[in-house]
Image (tube, rainbow, N blue to C red; front, side, top):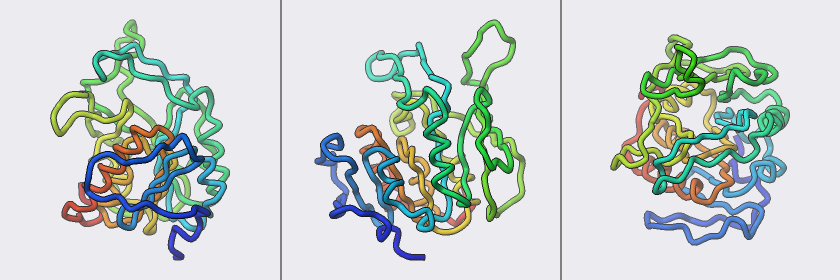
Length: 256
């Protein structure tokens, strides 16, 4: 496969050293790029990136896009008691659907909600069971909404043939040293390792990168990663997380 960077029309890349804060202002340019080892991360709108990225330059998409459910949360406790923010582009599934149209026949793993129609070309549905410690929803119901759907699109996935119900506890605390979540909708590391470990090919694309869990799994499993995140704070978290994973001892594909 050609080097992933050959598909981008960007003037230059910025090397990230193992030091503190990134000195950049993402909102002053359409897309700002950072390279960390073999991984390339963009701060900006994923639609701008996809307009310059050839789908043939990636082997698989793994992403958690806006679900189109206009998510709001009354919970507080993060950032000094501030309510959790809403999600950009969550008024409908147009961002998810635009991604699926762009990627053509590229295999994909895409998170979603039963509240909206499943994406086109969905071949299988996995269930992420998030644990009994989460799930508020309608308190008049005697069941917790503690699951999410994961849509499998395309072919080429491989590995141990296990259950379609994936049981990995969702991170909840914002304050636990070393274990607190960095993003309101962060996925657990072991879940992403399980999913990425079964992806075909070498290069994984996540256009809704969040705090970088997909990229972290790629770094640990020896895959190349291309990620995009609109929010600068989450982008910087992703850069640090992926860099830390890159310098950690690599794991064999499929290990959690």
